[in-house]
Image 1 (tube, rainbow, N blue to C red):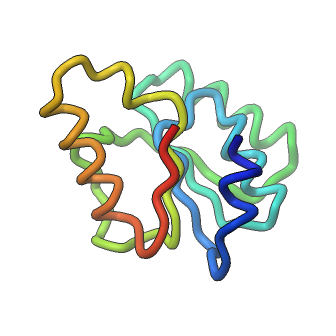
Image 2 (cartoon, rainbow, N blue to C red; image 1 turned 180 degrees about the vertical axis):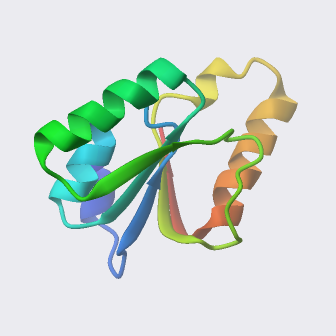
Amino acid sequence: MIASAFSSIRGVESVLDAPCGVGRATIWLAQKSYRATGIDLGEAALEVAAEQLQAAGVDAHVEKQNILGMDCRDRAYDAVLCFRLIHHFQQRELRDQSIAELCRVADSHVAIS
């Protein structure tokens, strides 16, 4: 699904994977030559993601961030990937807030599953 979404966009260099979990999509993005950054709130997930990034030998990083209020400048990334998260927010306000935040930090593309 991610490969399909990214096959149709052009001019993207930097991608935020939010949330990244254990880093599978972050690794894939880095292997496809994107400047990839993964964010997540889970300390354990971030530890595993950092280990997986190192094991894969990719140039990417992960950091602790809250998707509902990221510490990133507006339009900081060419694209943002949000895979398997939105459906976890039962309240519409949280879904709307997270989507607004994803759009705020994306320059041109937001891919949400």
